[in-house]
Length: 494
Ligand code: HEM
Image (cartoon, rainbow, N blue to C red; front, side, top):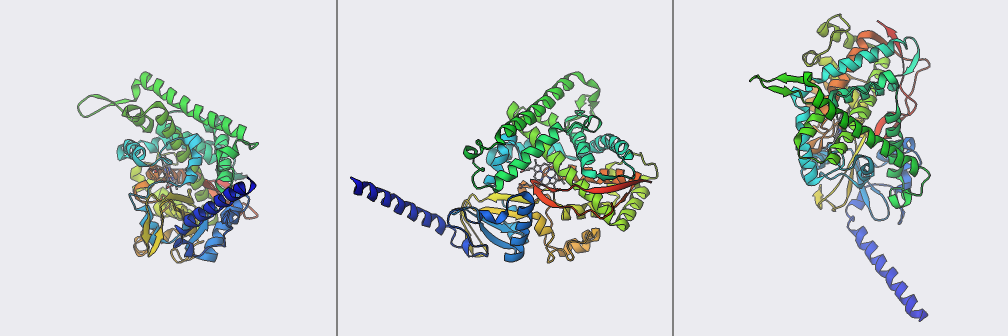
Protein backbone atom coordinates (compact mmCIF):
# COMPACT_ATOMS: atom_id res chain seq x y z
CA UNK A 1 0.00 0.00 0.00
CA UNK A 2 2.75 2.36 1.15
CA UNK A 3 4.85 1.66 -1.92
CA UNK A 4 1.89 2.42 -4.24
CA UNK A 5 1.38 5.79 -2.52
CA UNK A 6 5.13 6.53 -2.71
CA UNK A 7 5.21 5.51 -6.36
CA UNK A 8 2.21 7.76 -7.17
CA UNK A 9 3.88 10.73 -5.43
CA UNK A 10 7.15 10.08 -7.29
CA UNK A 11 5.22 9.87 -10.56
CA UNK A 12 3.39 13.14 -9.84
CA UNK A 13 6.63 14.90 -8.99
CA UNK A 14 8.19 13.45 -12.14
CA UNK A 15 5.33 14.78 -14.26
CA UNK A 16 5.47 18.14 -12.53
CA UNK A 17 9.20 18.33 -13.21
CA UNK A 18 8.71 17.47 -16.89
CA UNK A 19 5.96 20.10 -17.19
CA UNK A 20 8.18 22.68 -15.46
CA UNK A 21 11.05 21.91 -17.86
CA UNK A 22 8.74 22.11 -20.91
CA UNK A 23 7.28 25.47 -19.76
CA UNK A 24 10.76 26.86 -19.18
CA UNK A 25 11.96 25.60 -22.55
CA UNK A 26 9.40 27.87 -24.25
CA UNK A 27 11.60 30.77 -23.16
CA UNK A 28 14.89 29.15 -24.24
CA UNK A 29 15.68 31.99 -26.68
CA UNK A 30 14.74 34.83 -24.35
CA UNK A 31 16.62 33.21 -21.50
CA UNK A 32 19.78 33.96 -23.49
CA UNK A 33 19.19 37.68 -22.99
CA UNK A 34 21.29 39.21 -20.22
CA UNK A 35 19.64 39.36 -16.80
CA UNK A 36 20.15 38.45 -13.14
CA UNK A 37 20.43 34.79 -12.07
CA UNK A 38 16.91 33.51 -11.30
CA UNK A 39 15.74 31.28 -8.43
CA UNK A 40 13.95 28.17 -9.75
CA UNK A 41 10.74 29.07 -7.84
CA UNK A 42 10.51 32.84 -7.40
CA UNK A 43 12.66 33.80 -10.38
CA UNK A 44 14.02 37.37 -10.03
CA UNK A 45 11.11 38.58 -7.90
CA UNK A 46 13.47 39.68 -5.12
CA UNK A 47 15.46 42.00 -7.41
CA UNK A 48 13.05 44.87 -6.88
CA UNK A 49 13.22 45.54 -3.14
CA UNK A 50 10.52 46.23 -0.60
CA UNK A 51 9.06 49.57 -1.60
CA UNK A 52 8.38 51.71 -4.64
CA UNK A 53 11.48 53.88 -4.26
CA UNK A 54 13.72 50.80 -4.06
CA UNK A 55 12.03 49.14 -7.01
CA UNK A 56 12.34 52.34 -9.08
CA UNK A 57 16.08 52.55 -8.37
CA UNK A 58 16.61 48.82 -8.83
CA UNK A 59 15.06 48.88 -12.29
CA UNK A 60 17.56 51.60 -13.24
CA UNK A 61 20.37 49.46 -11.79
CA UNK A 62 19.22 46.45 -13.84
CA UNK A 63 19.36 48.44 -17.08
CA UNK A 64 22.76 49.88 -16.15
CA UNK A 65 24.06 46.38 -15.51
CA UNK A 66 22.46 44.39 -18.35
CA UNK A 67 21.83 46.90 -21.13
CA UNK A 68 18.75 48.08 -23.06
CA UNK A 69 17.16 44.63 -23.57
CA UNK A 70 17.12 42.24 -20.64
CA UNK A 71 15.12 39.38 -19.24
CA UNK A 72 13.54 39.09 -15.82
CA UNK A 73 11.94 35.90 -14.54
CA UNK A 74 8.77 37.07 -12.73
CA UNK A 75 8.69 33.65 -11.06
CA UNK A 76 10.06 30.21 -11.94
CA UNK A 77 7.89 29.99 -15.04
CA UNK A 78 7.00 33.41 -16.36
CA UNK A 79 9.40 35.71 -18.12
CA UNK A 80 9.34 39.46 -18.82
CA UNK A 81 11.48 41.29 -21.31
CA UNK A 82 12.49 44.78 -20.13
CA UNK A 83 13.17 47.07 -23.06
CA UNK A 84 14.39 50.61 -23.73
CA UNK A 85 15.65 49.94 -27.25
CA UNK A 86 13.52 52.06 -29.68
CA UNK A 87 13.63 49.45 -32.49
CA UNK A 88 12.14 46.73 -30.31
CA UNK A 89 9.78 49.25 -28.66
CA UNK A 90 8.51 50.27 -32.10
CA UNK A 91 7.97 46.67 -33.14
CA UNK A 92 5.65 45.93 -30.22
CA UNK A 93 3.92 49.27 -29.64
CA UNK A 94 3.02 49.82 -33.27
CA UNK A 95 1.51 46.35 -33.56
CA UNK A 96 -2.24 45.92 -33.97
CA UNK A 97 -1.96 42.39 -32.60
CA UNK A 98 -0.07 42.88 -29.33
CA UNK A 99 -2.54 45.26 -27.76
CA UNK A 100 -3.33 43.25 -24.62
CA UNK A 101 -2.01 44.73 -21.39
CA UNK A 102 -0.03 42.52 -19.00
CA UNK A 103 -1.53 40.68 -16.04
CA UNK A 104 -0.31 43.51 -13.76
CA UNK A 105 -3.11 45.75 -15.10
CA UNK A 106 -5.71 43.27 -13.81
CA UNK A 107 -4.94 44.73 -10.39
CA UNK A 108 -6.71 47.92 -11.55
CA UNK A 109 -9.80 45.94 -12.34
CA UNK A 110 -11.50 46.07 -8.91
CA UNK A 111 -11.60 49.87 -9.35
CA UNK A 112 -11.51 50.62 -13.10
CA UNK A 113 -13.25 47.44 -14.27
CA UNK A 114 -13.15 47.13 -18.05
CA UNK A 115 -12.25 50.80 -18.62
CA UNK A 116 -10.07 51.76 -21.58
CA UNK A 117 -6.73 51.45 -19.77
CA UNK A 118 -7.41 47.82 -18.85
CA UNK A 119 -9.50 46.19 -21.50
CA UNK A 120 -8.50 44.62 -24.81
CA UNK A 121 -9.97 42.98 -27.88
CA UNK A 122 -13.41 43.88 -29.13
CA UNK A 123 -14.54 45.83 -26.01
CA UNK A 124 -11.47 48.02 -26.28
CA UNK A 125 -12.01 48.65 -30.01
CA UNK A 126 -15.67 49.54 -29.44
CA UNK A 127 -15.00 51.85 -26.45
CA UNK A 128 -12.03 53.53 -28.10
CA UNK A 129 -14.20 54.30 -31.14
CA UNK A 130 -16.97 55.76 -28.98
CA UNK A 131 -14.53 57.86 -26.93
CA UNK A 132 -12.27 59.20 -29.68
CA UNK A 133 -14.68 62.06 -30.61
CA UNK A 134 -14.36 63.31 -27.00
CA UNK A 135 -10.94 64.66 -28.01
CA UNK A 136 -11.77 66.11 -31.43
CA UNK A 137 -10.89 69.74 -32.16
CA UNK A 138 -14.42 71.02 -31.51
CA UNK A 139 -14.30 69.56 -28.00
CA UNK A 140 -10.68 70.57 -27.40
CA UNK A 141 -11.59 74.18 -28.13
CA UNK A 142 -13.80 74.23 -25.03
CA UNK A 143 -11.03 73.05 -22.67
CA UNK A 144 -9.11 76.35 -22.24
CA UNK A 145 -12.23 77.99 -20.80
CA UNK A 146 -12.43 75.30 -18.10
CA UNK A 147 -8.71 75.50 -17.36
CA UNK A 148 -9.00 79.26 -17.08
CA UNK A 149 -11.88 78.98 -14.61
CA UNK A 150 -10.06 76.45 -12.41
CA UNK A 151 -6.83 78.39 -12.95
CA UNK A 152 -8.29 81.56 -11.44
CA UNK A 153 -8.92 79.70 -8.19
CA UNK A 154 -5.42 78.23 -8.32
CA UNK A 155 -3.81 81.65 -8.67
CA UNK A 156 -5.94 83.01 -5.82
CA UNK A 157 -4.82 80.13 -3.58
CA UNK A 158 -1.17 80.49 -4.61
CA UNK A 159 -1.14 84.24 -3.92
CA UNK A 160 -1.68 83.43 -0.25
CA UNK A 161 1.51 81.33 -0.29
CA UNK A 162 3.85 84.07 -1.54
CA UNK A 163 7.33 83.81 -0.07
CA UNK A 164 6.72 80.47 1.67
CA UNK A 165 8.26 77.10 0.81
CA UNK A 166 5.35 75.10 -0.62
CA UNK A 167 4.85 71.65 -2.10
CA UNK A 168 3.35 72.78 -5.41
CA UNK A 169 1.91 69.30 -6.06
CA UNK A 170 -0.59 69.73 -3.20
CA UNK A 171 -2.12 72.73 -4.97
CA UNK A 172 -1.94 71.38 -8.51
CA UNK A 173 -3.67 68.09 -7.70
CA UNK A 174 -6.77 69.89 -6.41
CA UNK A 175 -6.67 72.17 -9.44
CA UNK A 176 -6.39 69.17 -11.79
CA UNK A 177 -9.40 67.57 -10.11
CA UNK A 178 -11.50 70.71 -10.63
CA UNK A 179 -10.27 71.01 -14.22
CA UNK A 180 -11.02 67.42 -15.30
CA UNK A 181 -14.48 67.42 -13.69
CA UNK A 182 -15.41 70.76 -15.23
CA UNK A 183 -13.91 70.16 -18.67
CA UNK A 184 -14.97 66.56 -19.19
CA UNK A 185 -18.10 66.21 -17.09
CA UNK A 186 -19.24 69.84 -16.67
CA UNK A 187 -19.44 69.23 -12.92
CA UNK A 188 -18.18 71.65 -10.27
CA UNK A 189 -16.52 69.61 -7.52
CA UNK A 190 -14.84 72.68 -5.98
CA UNK A 191 -11.89 70.63 -4.76
CA UNK A 192 -9.68 73.74 -4.46
CA UNK A 193 -12.23 75.81 -2.53
CA UNK A 194 -13.27 73.06 -0.13
CA UNK A 195 -9.80 71.52 0.10
CA UNK A 196 -11.62 68.17 0.14
CA UNK A 197 -9.06 65.46 -0.54
CA UNK A 198 -11.25 62.42 0.21
CA UNK A 199 -11.23 61.26 -3.42
CA UNK A 200 -7.54 62.05 -3.93
CA UNK A 201 -6.58 60.25 -0.69
CA UNK A 202 -8.59 57.17 -1.66
CA UNK A 203 -6.82 57.08 -5.07
CA UNK A 204 -3.47 57.45 -3.30
CA UNK A 205 -4.17 54.53 -0.96
CA UNK A 206 -5.47 52.38 -3.83
CA UNK A 207 -2.32 53.05 -5.88
CA UNK A 208 -0.01 52.32 -2.95
CA UNK A 209 -1.65 48.93 -2.57
CA UNK A 210 -1.71 48.41 -6.34
CA UNK A 211 2.05 48.85 -6.48
CA UNK A 212 2.77 46.64 -3.47
CA UNK A 213 0.62 43.94 -5.03
CA UNK A 214 2.28 44.43 -8.44
CA UNK A 215 5.71 43.62 -7.05
CA UNK A 216 4.54 41.08 -4.44
CA UNK A 217 4.82 37.37 -5.08
CA UNK A 218 1.67 36.39 -3.14
CA UNK A 219 -0.51 39.49 -2.68
CA UNK A 220 -0.91 39.75 -6.44
CA UNK A 221 -3.52 37.08 -6.01
CA UNK A 222 -6.85 38.11 -4.43
CA UNK A 223 -6.88 34.76 -2.61
CA UNK A 224 -3.85 35.77 -0.50
CA UNK A 225 -4.50 39.52 -0.46
CA UNK A 226 -7.92 39.16 1.18
CA UNK A 227 -6.11 38.12 4.40
CA UNK A 228 -3.97 41.29 4.40
CA UNK A 229 -4.69 43.87 7.16
CA UNK A 230 -5.04 46.46 4.37
CA UNK A 231 -7.81 44.59 2.58
CA UNK A 232 -10.77 46.14 4.44
CA UNK A 233 -9.67 49.75 3.82
CA UNK A 234 -8.89 48.81 0.22
CA UNK A 235 -12.46 47.61 -0.42
CA UNK A 236 -13.83 50.67 1.35
CA UNK A 237 -11.76 52.98 -0.87
CA UNK A 238 -12.92 51.26 -4.05
CA UNK A 239 -16.52 51.55 -2.93
CA UNK A 240 -16.05 55.25 -2.22
CA UNK A 241 -14.29 55.95 -5.54
CA UNK A 242 -17.00 54.22 -7.53
CA UNK A 243 -19.84 55.88 -5.63
CA UNK A 244 -18.19 59.28 -6.21
CA UNK A 245 -18.19 58.61 -9.94
CA UNK A 246 -21.76 57.34 -9.93
CA UNK A 247 -22.85 60.54 -8.21
CA UNK A 248 -20.99 62.65 -10.81
CA UNK A 249 -22.82 60.78 -13.59
CA UNK A 250 -26.20 61.18 -11.89
CA UNK A 251 -25.55 64.89 -11.33
CA UNK A 252 -24.68 65.37 -15.00
CA UNK A 253 -27.80 63.49 -16.09
CA UNK A 254 -29.93 65.82 -13.94
CA UNK A 255 -28.16 68.92 -15.25
CA UNK A 256 -28.57 67.82 -18.85
CA UNK A 257 -32.31 67.79 -18.31
CA UNK A 258 -32.38 71.12 -16.47
CA UNK A 259 -29.67 73.15 -18.18
CA UNK A 260 -31.02 74.58 -21.38
CA UNK A 261 -28.52 77.44 -21.47
CA UNK A 262 -25.78 74.98 -22.40
CA UNK A 263 -27.40 74.41 -25.71
CA UNK A 264 -26.16 76.22 -28.75
CA UNK A 265 -27.59 76.58 -32.25
CA UNK A 266 -26.12 74.76 -35.24
CA UNK A 267 -25.78 76.21 -38.74
CA UNK A 268 -29.40 75.28 -39.52
CA UNK A 269 -30.77 77.03 -36.43
CA UNK A 270 -31.34 73.73 -34.59
CA UNK A 271 -30.68 73.47 -30.86
CA UNK A 272 -27.57 71.43 -30.23
CA UNK A 273 -25.86 70.53 -26.93
CA UNK A 274 -22.13 71.30 -26.60
CA UNK A 275 -20.90 67.85 -25.79
CA UNK A 276 -18.17 66.98 -23.36
CA UNK A 277 -16.68 63.56 -22.66
CA UNK A 278 -19.45 62.42 -20.33
CA UNK A 279 -22.17 63.54 -22.77
CA UNK A 280 -20.55 61.48 -25.50
CA UNK A 281 -20.76 58.41 -23.27
CA UNK A 282 -24.34 59.11 -22.24
CA UNK A 283 -25.48 59.80 -25.80
CA UNK A 284 -23.75 56.80 -27.36
CA UNK A 285 -26.51 54.40 -26.27
CA UNK A 286 -23.97 51.64 -26.76
CA UNK A 287 -22.76 51.30 -23.20
CA UNK A 288 -24.32 49.91 -20.06
CA UNK A 289 -24.43 52.07 -16.91
CA UNK A 290 -21.59 50.02 -15.48
CA UNK A 291 -19.44 50.48 -18.60
CA UNK A 292 -20.05 54.24 -18.45
CA UNK A 293 -19.04 54.33 -14.79
CA UNK A 294 -15.87 52.37 -15.50
CA UNK A 295 -14.85 54.76 -18.27
CA UNK A 296 -15.56 57.78 -16.07
CA UNK A 297 -13.43 56.19 -13.32
CA UNK A 298 -10.68 55.61 -15.87
CA UNK A 299 -10.78 59.17 -17.20
CA UNK A 300 -10.89 60.74 -13.75
CA UNK A 301 -7.80 58.75 -12.84
CA UNK A 302 -6.02 59.40 -16.15
CA UNK A 303 -7.11 63.02 -16.15
CA UNK A 304 -6.02 64.22 -12.73
CA UNK A 305 -3.18 62.08 -11.39
CA UNK A 306 -0.91 62.14 -14.46
CA UNK A 307 -1.53 65.80 -15.16
CA UNK A 308 -0.84 67.01 -11.63
CA UNK A 309 2.48 65.20 -11.49
CA UNK A 310 3.53 66.57 -14.87
CA UNK A 311 2.56 70.19 -14.20
CA UNK A 312 4.22 70.10 -10.76
CA UNK A 313 7.46 68.65 -12.16
CA UNK A 314 7.35 71.31 -14.87
CA UNK A 315 6.98 74.19 -12.40
CA UNK A 316 9.70 72.68 -10.23
CA UNK A 317 12.14 72.40 -13.16
CA UNK A 318 11.56 76.07 -13.99
CA UNK A 319 12.82 77.01 -10.51
CA UNK A 320 16.08 75.23 -11.38
CA UNK A 321 16.31 76.82 -14.83
CA UNK A 322 15.72 80.57 -14.46
CA UNK A 323 16.89 81.28 -18.03
CA UNK A 324 14.28 78.94 -19.48
CA UNK A 325 11.69 80.48 -17.15
CA UNK A 326 12.45 84.03 -18.27
CA UNK A 327 12.47 83.14 -21.96
CA UNK A 328 9.16 81.35 -21.54
CA UNK A 329 7.61 84.27 -19.66
CA UNK A 330 8.69 86.65 -22.43
CA UNK A 331 7.09 84.41 -25.03
CA UNK A 332 3.83 84.20 -23.07
CA UNK A 333 3.69 87.99 -22.65
CA UNK A 334 4.49 88.64 -26.30
CA UNK A 335 1.73 86.25 -27.47
CA UNK A 336 -1.03 86.86 -24.90
CA UNK A 337 -0.22 90.44 -23.85
CA UNK A 338 0.48 91.98 -20.47
CA UNK A 339 -3.00 91.49 -18.99
CA UNK A 340 -2.34 88.59 -16.61
CA UNK A 341 -5.99 87.58 -16.55
CA UNK A 342 -6.54 87.41 -20.31
CA UNK A 343 -7.78 83.85 -21.01
CA UNK A 344 -5.29 81.80 -23.02
CA UNK A 345 -6.77 80.17 -26.13
CA UNK A 346 -5.67 77.36 -28.41
CA UNK A 347 -4.75 80.06 -30.93
CA UNK A 348 -2.30 81.57 -28.41
CA UNK A 349 -0.79 78.14 -27.69
CA UNK A 350 -0.23 77.55 -31.40
CA UNK A 351 1.96 80.65 -31.47
CA UNK A 352 4.10 79.53 -28.51
CA UNK A 353 6.92 77.48 -30.03
CA UNK A 354 9.17 77.69 -26.98
CA UNK A 355 6.35 76.62 -24.65
CA UNK A 356 5.85 73.56 -26.85
CA UNK A 357 9.51 72.59 -26.46
CA UNK A 358 9.55 73.26 -22.72
CA UNK A 359 6.52 71.06 -22.13
CA UNK A 360 7.95 68.29 -24.31
CA UNK A 361 11.13 68.40 -22.24
CA UNK A 362 9.03 68.07 -19.06
CA UNK A 363 7.26 65.04 -20.57
CA UNK A 364 10.66 63.56 -21.48
CA UNK A 365 12.26 63.90 -18.05
CA UNK A 366 9.11 63.06 -16.11
CA UNK A 367 6.90 60.71 -18.14
CA UNK A 368 3.81 60.41 -15.94
CA UNK A 369 3.43 56.73 -16.88
CA UNK A 370 7.03 55.57 -16.44
CA UNK A 371 6.31 51.88 -17.08
CA UNK A 372 3.79 50.26 -19.40
CA UNK A 373 3.38 46.59 -20.30
CA UNK A 374 1.93 44.23 -22.88
CA UNK A 375 1.33 40.49 -22.86
CA UNK A 376 1.98 38.81 -26.18
CA UNK A 377 -1.01 37.08 -27.71
CA UNK A 378 1.00 35.22 -30.30
CA UNK A 379 4.49 33.85 -30.68
CA UNK A 380 6.77 36.20 -32.64
CA UNK A 381 10.37 36.25 -33.80
CA UNK A 382 12.11 39.59 -33.37
CA UNK A 383 15.80 40.06 -34.20
CA UNK A 384 16.17 36.28 -34.40
CA UNK A 385 14.75 35.64 -30.90
CA UNK A 386 11.56 33.69 -30.33
CA UNK A 387 9.13 35.51 -28.00
CA UNK A 388 6.51 32.93 -26.99
CA UNK A 389 2.83 33.73 -26.46
CA UNK A 390 2.34 34.97 -22.89
CA UNK A 391 5.68 36.83 -22.66
CA UNK A 392 5.37 40.16 -20.84
CA UNK A 393 7.06 43.12 -22.51
CA UNK A 394 7.90 45.96 -20.08
CA UNK A 395 8.54 49.37 -21.63
CA UNK A 396 10.43 51.63 -19.23
CA UNK A 397 9.73 55.09 -20.59
CA UNK A 398 11.49 56.94 -17.78
CA UNK A 399 14.74 55.01 -18.31
CA UNK A 400 14.47 55.23 -22.10
CA UNK A 401 14.01 59.01 -22.02
CA UNK A 402 17.21 59.30 -19.97
CA UNK A 403 19.42 57.17 -22.21
CA UNK A 404 22.44 59.24 -23.21
CA UNK A 405 22.59 57.43 -26.59
CA UNK A 406 19.17 58.91 -27.40
CA UNK A 407 19.31 62.21 -25.48
CA UNK A 408 22.87 63.53 -24.93
CA UNK A 409 23.40 64.92 -21.39
CA UNK A 410 20.04 63.37 -20.48
CA UNK A 411 19.75 64.95 -17.01
CA UNK A 412 20.01 68.46 -18.47
CA UNK A 413 16.72 70.34 -18.88
CA UNK A 414 17.13 71.49 -22.47
CA UNK A 415 13.93 72.34 -24.38
CA UNK A 416 15.92 72.95 -27.56
CA UNK A 417 16.44 69.23 -28.00
CA UNK A 418 12.93 69.44 -29.46
CA UNK A 419 13.97 71.81 -32.26
CA UNK A 420 12.93 70.19 -35.56
CA UNK A 421 16.50 69.33 -36.64
CA UNK A 422 17.15 67.33 -33.44
CA UNK A 423 13.77 65.63 -33.56
CA UNK A 424 14.44 64.56 -37.17
CA UNK A 425 17.77 63.01 -36.18
CA UNK A 426 16.23 60.80 -33.45
CA UNK A 427 14.48 57.44 -33.72
CA UNK A 428 10.76 58.14 -33.88
CA UNK A 429 10.14 55.79 -30.93
CA UNK A 430 12.89 57.35 -28.75
CA UNK A 431 10.45 59.82 -27.20
CA UNK A 432 7.13 58.22 -26.21
CA UNK A 433 5.69 59.84 -23.06
CA UNK A 434 2.16 59.05 -24.28
CA UNK A 435 3.14 55.62 -25.62
CA UNK A 436 2.56 55.19 -29.35
CA UNK A 437 0.64 53.07 -31.82
CA UNK A 438 -2.98 51.95 -31.48
CA UNK A 439 -2.99 52.02 -27.66
CA UNK A 440 -1.44 55.43 -27.25
CA UNK A 441 -2.84 57.90 -24.73
CA UNK A 442 -6.25 59.12 -25.78
CA UNK A 443 -5.87 62.14 -23.46
CA UNK A 444 -2.58 63.35 -24.97
CA UNK A 445 -3.98 66.59 -26.39
CA UNK A 446 -5.97 67.30 -23.25
CA UNK A 447 -2.83 66.77 -21.15
CA UNK A 448 -0.67 68.96 -23.37
CA UNK A 449 -3.15 71.84 -23.48
CA UNK A 450 -3.78 71.72 -19.72
CA UNK A 451 -0.05 71.57 -18.90
CA UNK A 452 0.74 74.53 -21.17
CA UNK A 453 -2.12 76.71 -19.97
CA UNK A 454 -1.44 76.02 -16.30
CA UNK A 455 2.28 76.68 -16.55
CA UNK A 456 1.55 79.88 -18.50
CA UNK A 457 -1.01 81.09 -15.96
CA UNK A 458 1.30 80.48 -13.00
CA UNK A 459 4.23 82.13 -14.76
CA UNK A 460 2.19 85.23 -15.63
CA UNK A 461 1.60 85.86 -11.94
CA UNK A 462 4.74 84.56 -10.23
CA UNK A 463 8.47 84.23 -10.52
CA UNK A 464 9.24 80.63 -9.51
CA UNK A 465 12.18 80.29 -7.18
CA UNK A 466 14.08 77.35 -5.70
CA UNK A 467 13.91 76.72 -1.95
CA UNK A 468 17.05 76.70 0.18
CA UNK A 469 18.76 74.36 0.68
CA UNK A 470 18.03 72.96 -2.77
CA UNK A 471 15.22 70.39 -2.83
CA UNK A 472 16.11 66.97 -4.26
CA UNK A 473 13.02 65.02 -5.32
CA UNK A 474 12.96 61.31 -4.49
CA UNK A 475 11.33 59.78 -7.54
CA UNK A 476 9.25 56.62 -7.62
CA UNK A 477 6.73 54.87 -9.80
CA UNK A 478 3.55 55.22 -7.77
CA UNK A 479 1.62 53.91 -10.82
CA UNK A 480 2.18 57.51 -11.88
CA UNK A 481 5.67 59.05 -11.61
CA UNK A 482 5.79 61.01 -8.36
CA UNK A 483 8.20 62.70 -6.01
CA UNK A 484 7.92 60.97 -2.65
CA UNK A 485 9.19 64.02 -0.76
CA UNK A 486 7.05 66.54 -2.64
CA UNK A 487 8.11 69.27 -5.06
CA UNK A 488 9.13 72.28 -3.04
CA UNK A 489 9.22 75.71 -4.63
CA UNK A 490 8.86 79.38 -3.62
CA UNK A 491 6.64 81.97 -5.33
CA UNK A 492 7.30 85.68 -5.79
CA UNK A 493 4.54 87.89 -7.21
CA UNK A 494 5.45 89.55 -10.51
C1 HEM B 1 0.84 64.08 -18.86
C2 HEM B 1 -0.24 63.38 -18.85
C3 HEM B 1 -0.38 61.98 -19.40
C4 HEM B 1 0.56 61.07 -19.75
C5 HEM B 1 2.07 61.21 -19.72
C6 HEM B 1 -0.14 59.88 -20.20
C7 HEM B 1 0.46 58.74 -20.66
C8 HEM B 1 -0.21 57.61 -21.09
C9 HEM B 1 0.43 56.40 -21.55
C10 HEM B 1 1.93 56.16 -21.61
C11 HEM B 1 -0.56 55.55 -21.91
C12 HEM B 1 -0.38 54.11 -22.41
C13 HEM B 1 -0.66 53.19 -21.25
C14 HEM B 1 -0.39 51.75 -21.52
O1 HEM B 1 -0.04 51.35 -22.61
O2 HEM B 1 -0.56 50.99 -20.57
C15 HEM B 1 -1.82 56.20 -21.67
C16 HEM B 1 -3.04 55.64 -21.92
C17 HEM B 1 -4.22 56.24 -21.61
N1 HEM B 1 -4.39 57.52 -21.12
FE1 HEM B 1 -2.96 58.85 -20.71
N2 HEM B 1 -1.48 60.11 -20.11
C18 HEM B 1 -1.67 61.38 -19.64
C19 HEM B 1 -2.87 62.02 -19.45
C20 HEM B 1 -4.09 61.48 -19.70
C21 HEM B 1 -5.34 62.19 -19.60
C22 HEM B 1 -5.46 63.65 -19.27
C23 HEM B 1 -6.31 61.31 -19.89
C24 HEM B 1 -7.79 61.51 -19.93
C25 HEM B 1 -8.39 62.67 -19.95
C26 HEM B 1 -5.68 60.03 -20.18
C27 HEM B 1 -6.35 58.87 -20.48
C28 HEM B 1 -5.73 57.73 -20.93
C29 HEM B 1 -6.47 56.53 -21.32
C30 HEM B 1 -7.97 56.33 -21.24
C31 HEM B 1 -5.51 55.60 -21.76
C32 HEM B 1 -5.77 54.21 -22.31
C33 HEM B 1 -5.89 54.30 -23.80
C34 HEM B 1 -6.10 52.96 -24.50
O3 HEM B 1 -5.53 51.96 -24.07
O4 HEM B 1 -6.82 52.95 -25.50
N3 HEM B 1 -4.33 60.18 -20.07
N4 HEM B 1 -1.58 57.46 -21.18
